[in-house]
Length: 197
Image 1 (cartoon, rainbow, N blue to C red):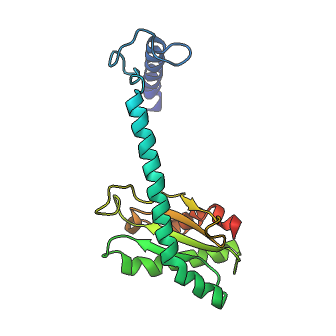
Image 2: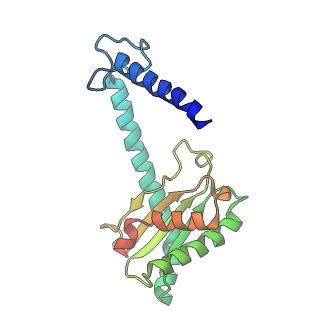
Image 3: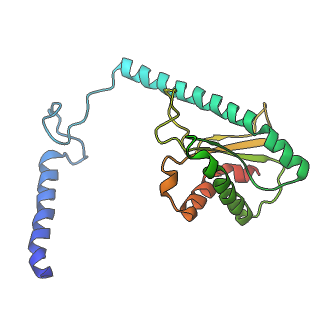
């Protein structure tokens, strides 16, 4: 039965090569005279000045919103940072943002996973306090037009606060993930904050 498939696979590969040869130039770009929609590989037209300005403004707005959300998270975590410093407790302070139906069970579960990941890293008590902001909203926080926290956003120690580092992770599919997968994702999301710690 496998021998019967070989001619079909060969024909499919040959068809792909012919299509690529006909529609693409040697450098991989579409033919010079191609108009929009004339080939399946045609690119969108040039970016207009208005579109470039809109993209720039959107990026700036998202950066400012991220800074504000991190500042709010730092304020919410300050009592926990203070408690951990006074008692010399290791691990990561956690703030979870998400639907009320998920929060009561999510907070202790995520904290246990972070404690486990922190012990595995072998960092113990550190001079730089590390905080994790976890966003469980499936499509962004209701009532805001902004995007949810993205994974891999960080607020490093700076002139306003030299003793804390915050990391963020978005888990919109939190309830569908296994504990081990969530734990490894949280551990990886600590990123450069583990270096600061």
